[in-house]
Image 1: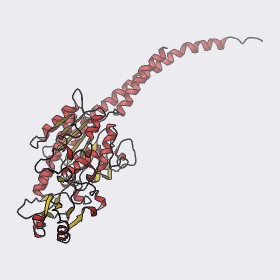
Image 2: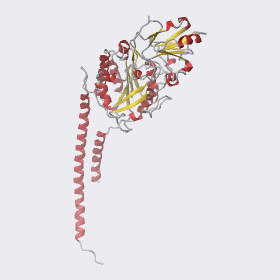
Image 3: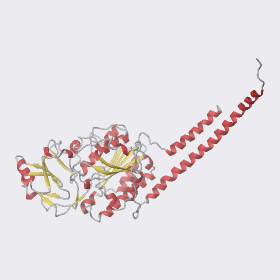
Image 4: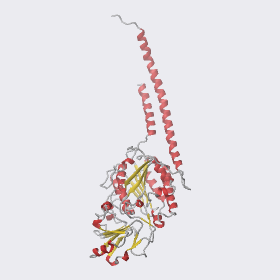
Length: 478
């Protein structure tokens, strides 16, 4: 009986050591999805980005993320949280007209809060809450809209003047409250804003990218301070990239069309054109061969690979500019040196994807994924049932630590930006508790092993003495 009792602490000590080496996450995992608007995939290499590279070293990185057409902010952010193409989720552009509802939607005028535009899909925060969990969104596009009679459990009404630090503070507060969220969504407007203003190839974009890297460093620090870093899955992505434009590459619609014959619903680089009644053929023929860098489609002829045909909000005619070309009605309108919205096959339109956390592999690089694949991945992490979607979990399951194909080595950038936190400090921060735990676990196992063996030997001594006494007795005679 005494031997069995001694086995109990021995087993407990062994379990302590095993959990030190392998901290298995709870089934109810925490996920933080972060979007830096307009962060093109190769911004990671234009200037030193040590904090992004720190996440890459300790997590996963996907080189090529194919987003959806059109490569604009609202369509792609809704895709990230629904897994649907624009024609399926209904947010087909930043500016739309619905002929059935006879309503308009405009990002420029912040006329975006009409629930009818959003309810062709169900965003993940609603699915998460229907499963009994809590969600929190800090400025995520669409999260402050009442969709299917619901908001996120916690959300910040959109206000671009709210600092990144204040947004992070809210996210941390929600994750650490008495009734914590398991899903957080965090949005920041740059580098998109400055990419439009400067153009992605401008040397002045260097400091902008460095600032985003420092913001990521700040987020990592706050997560560590709140003791969330080791048990939260952090996903960093974006909606689209950016390409350089020039005033020498402008297509002026007034040169080819009479303004009275159509309404321009959405502008560059995909002009959504609604011809006036009886003017369809005239408008189409006028544009069809108007400019060598403009491709014009009737709605039913839009290429299938764009999945941009079957929705009433997609206009009867769309005119798509070639990369770097800009569509204006006339040159008196505003022009931007950087733009997006172009063909989603163009590398310049592709965003980033990084992830780190207990569910993800470490130092792993994957070649490609689709932005629609994020949604089933999120649902898997949150252990909730997906709604119908256009993504593929199978396409991204190799990012998870439970799948172990051969890893691709990765070399971390070691250049440090002025004022940023040294990534090595993160490693030391994580390493100390780990090695202390291993050392203590080893000592506990060693001590209890010695006690157990000594007790086992002592308990066997009387039995050995009895055995010797029996051997010394003469055998019974037959």
